[in-house]
Image (tube, rainbow, N blue to C red):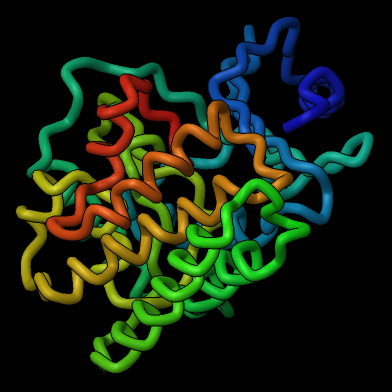
Length: 290
């Protein structure tokens, strides 16, 4: 996010208007969205420019999933569960969970993700399909105005790979359901309540293997009933999608071009396809999501 100062002011102003004391704001994550810990009220705030977020959908879905006991971070209980707008920003307020150690085991995260998927199967909310996200990536790659630094050969590689994988996954006709969309380690909190998922803005419909393509291999190995061939295709698709986003001229991910270049090297190298956490570790970066 380019205007972090204004976004912080918007979030603290919203909190103050709701009688939540917010004298200080600690930036927890800043890329295309901003995540803050507001103190002393101890609230987790998520902020995005109005029109560039699906915060209303996220709030509605979170309410429904929490009601059925899904392993999800709760909205802040001291205020109405809604999207607050201030100075051109959309602000949502969530419970802040003090992190605990050690990190949850792969078995525990796999169990939590399965419970989340089970809960999502009971929710009927209009949502995009995973192919809509593929289309977004394809549009970035196809338009030199949106990806001016992407070399022609790399543009051809990414565009062809995205199209081929979309067709291959569709042709499998796998059962689809509502998914988290990006359940990578950056979107899993380690709390005294166990692993809790955050950030539902990327929810979409698709096979569960699409979600599992975002998690470390040690987690997907403990998820039952996985189609390993489909998971392999989804892993490659996710690598290509993330690569496309990193070349978007408007991308604000820290050191995004470095990640984009590494992902292109991975795609050129061929199988076996690494998981995203492996790519992150190669660059000696702490995990903060995509």
